[in-house]
Image (cartoon, rainbow over all chains, first blue to last red; front, side, top):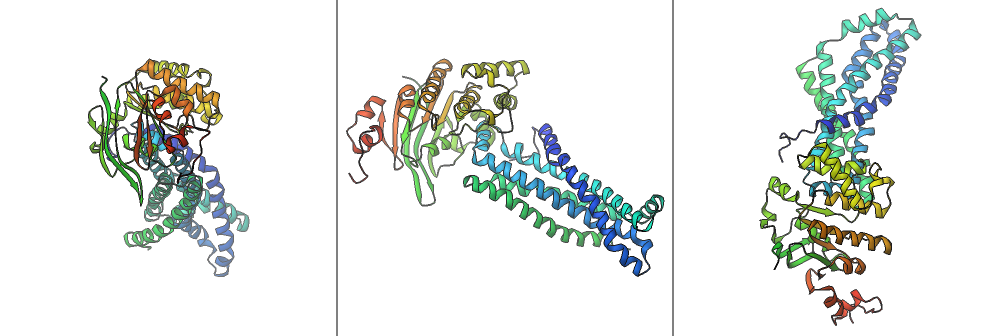
Length: 232
Length: 251
């Protein structure tokens, strides 16, 4: 099947971007703030001990942008979205809704799978950038409470240290993570069988496989990005 | 004599070691209502699914309206499918769509009707199944009988030349069974459709069948009018059609 030929399912893709992506904002908001706060709380005493407290914004920001923001957002996204896709498509499979679509001359793969995969691939980087901002904000809040760092100082240090080579790999790899979440949930749900047992299995294995794949791909992509943009 | 709309020749289908269809050959004529009887697991639903390409048979030929279904590329298959409707056992309504959206979905996707025409067709189809009041309900708000009716309305909305019913009355009470069966018969007469209905239900078959076949062990065991089939002096047939008759497989 040639999925690049029309009809393009813009409306359906937009619907999934809202359902799968926009509705994930509340849960990742909490995650983002906590990442920044906890990272600062854990690191600050050690940085003080080594006389390097001034580097705290640098460390928090780079950790968030390069690794924690993308990976933790992807894992949260996988937990919420991949299981949902697996359960929804699995349920449609076992109740013959996918067959009904096929018999009605509607290509279910294009309508159900491609739209969800595209929606996940687009929404994941947007969520990550949002989480990165919140985590840096959480880092500032904790740093301000612990050592009275001013907003201007914190922001100036952040802007000073963040480079193009930090942002692009961090955000870039989330396209892959979004794709992994969408394709894993869709594949397992679309091919579900054995009734309700199959739906449950599709839902849980979607989370497990997409989380594992995210971590494995993260390891590979980190190696590639360090090769392209080595840490100076 | 009416034209042959569906021709099935030597159809074989197995799942692993289990042979479900073992050389089924069958013709269905235009505007005819054919009922397919058979015990559970004898391949009745598999036969229907092979007709529309949901399952690929191991060998054999299926021709619908002169078109060889089994060697059809997807694009041409979808063109053919626009003239075929399938009422699934569970009705298979799209859970995430309202009744209106369920009915308008195939029209929007496959035809170039205006919104006004689509609305008119949706309303007319629901009127035909006496469910005009359910137009904005979600499938989860409907009873089993209502779901079947909506499924039927969705199936007839494109006015197909061939209707396939997979156990249209399973799980329904006798009154609703009669209502759905009469509806199937009336719609078939009004829209001049050809239909193949898989069922266990004698009440349903008595209402809709012009002709019936009995599938057993992958073969067509008997074929003919319903009166003829129910009168056949054969232990399997008596076992199947007579509620009083009970005989085990070994006689």
